[in-house]
Image (cartoon, rainbow, N blue to C red; front, side):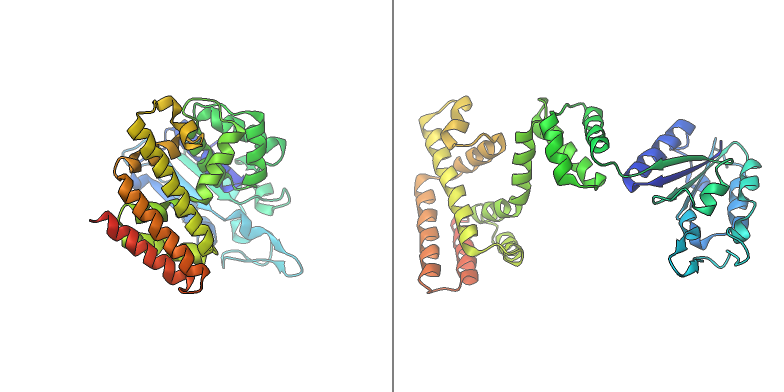
Length: 337
């Protein structure tokens, strides 16, 4: 059939659209043969004229219509909604009556696809097109269906995942498949060829939540004062209190000290995680990189400035925000010497 209706979850609809284009060989059609119409702003005559035209120097003409079927839904207590002046009040389909016959007469070189959010079976246009188009409903998966989707998506990325990791992701991900796909991509890379375990999920989520804190601390230590001040401002706006930020700076300096000790003692690579007290290879690698750029005297100076800022806040000598800004400036200035 030259026509398809794809409705449901936006992620799944987009994936199915890509597959349809690939199957029809229409993913690389020329721009002159590619049309995207907004349903409420188009009409039957315009659509038919486009679809009946033969493709120009190409094998297919691709016509995508977004949001048309949803305009035929009822509003509770408000009667029939009419998002377009083309929809007459006399019937359920108005001026769109006959779309099914128009589709039957379209050339095989036209691929017509209607895109919509999830539609009920009672949608008048959906019923009208059942004989003229292929209907593909893709509701957002939940429960066991979501677990199967996660497993299949991970396998598409060339990785595998444990049942416990799938359980954690289904609890955290909700129904946002776009975000879940992004997290699965990161987890596949993070696991580095191994099976994705629940520990990977927990560590990646932990790192994501603290990414701005790490970035602010790194900017301080690396001498990027403007970046550090900007990130500190964002952290304060997000509700992170000064004691928490100071504790994170202290944590990073402690890791640097342990890493510096590992460099001086030439501790083997395989023992670095145990020496630093972490299982994260990302944290080990980052701490070792920083340690090689800083001497013991530099690390001790930074510790002292951190202690001074902490005491100034606790003794009421400096407002927390100002103390953090001065700390960031001092740390950054030290890196530029």
